[in-house]
Image 1 (cartoon, rainbow, N blue to C red):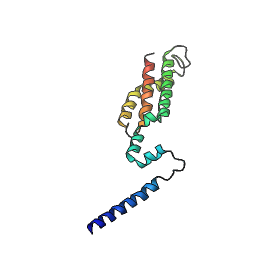
Image 2 (cartoon, rainbow, N blue to C red):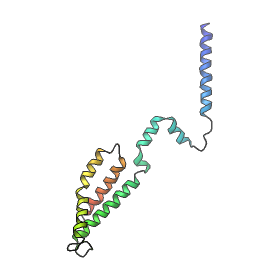
Image 3 (cartoon, rainbow, N blue to C red):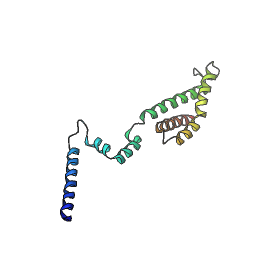
Length: 141
């Protein structure tokens, strides 16, 4: 009698598993298997979310950081070169020179803050890294 109860229980489990597997094998409407694999596996989805740099989602913050860094570099280079529109002796020299100098002074503190906030704001880290590289590289030109 115990043997029949055991086999009945195994049959019920197998039947429940078969129904569940059949429900999972239904075709997905417009979704690839890779997307559904991430949806079914939370660990894979978590790893995919951490892999933002490889997926290219930080190109925009990096590009904006590079553009603003180059703008600050141009302001600084023009402020010390004679003959530039905002060079020494012009009316714009003080204002543009102050903006450029502030941009250089705030480079390293911004980079340090972004290192501390890297886990929560990774886009800010990529922005400040490319900004810092652009500004510091311009100081050696």
